[in-house]
Length: 376
View 1 (cartoon, rainbow, N blue to C red):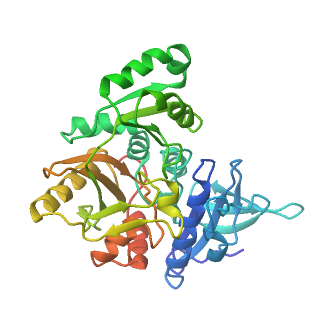
View 2 (tube, helix red, strand yellow; view 1 turned 60 degrees about the vertical axis):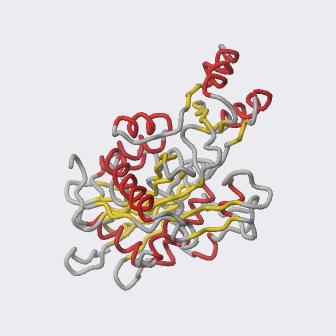
View 3 (cartoon, rainbow, N blue to C red; view 1 turned 90 degrees about the vertical axis):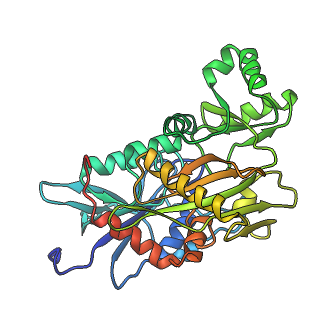
């Protein structure tokens, strides 16, 4: 197959989605939105799915197949499709398709990867490291920023070192829980109830529980440990509002911040759980802009940019805050690959700030195309 010269062809973008984490289905939903938004007159798009067993396949790229239907009917990568690999030589990295009883087919060089993977084995620096080794440009944060931001315990250490306020917490592991559960319970009592029990390296609110008192701790810890052998116990921000801010690099590398937004969860949801985040008909309301004073909004945006730079982030991030009645702010977490459907918070905040979804996708691709791999 004769590949057009780099100067004469459109940049080839590989959208990689799915993955081995419990957020596989949400990643597929995100990919459907990105595939629908990419300008096909400007880019050659190749959809690559990672099945739950880790197999890479050439997906159909049909956005309709990747829509969310219900909590128990999330889309998934079709692992039976033709496998695909990145084959590197001295001059380029090509996409090569392997089908049974067929010779390998080279699709051509990939210019940039758009990894819309959520959770471990994707959002945590693993795929970023692989792409760095292959010398392939990619959208979003690098290895260290991805890994630090994915691990909520280390994220707090880095943010605190940069002078950013975070909620008190303790971290326990499966080994500690099995060896000395009573000691872990005493640590939890030391920071006080109610508290949230979270998988340290998870997302989409999967495995998160609220322990109102000691009687609910054990079950909450076991629920989180099913997702991750490392668990964060964090003091609940009682009385605080949940406010978020999008950060996006400009083409010169400067972090820009979006209009802040507030989440208000109603119905039977005590916190912003999986159903409240993703399922239609749930009682979640979003206010953009958030109802904040000008001074608090400006401080929130300043802290969001500071958090972005503290972890060495690139491309994009969503920084989540607790806003207390006295006007004080605490950083909850930073997400280097936030929910990215048009109805997700991050794209909505940027749309309200003047950058619509297709333009946002294009900005991220352009940022990745101009960035080299390796130390920078």
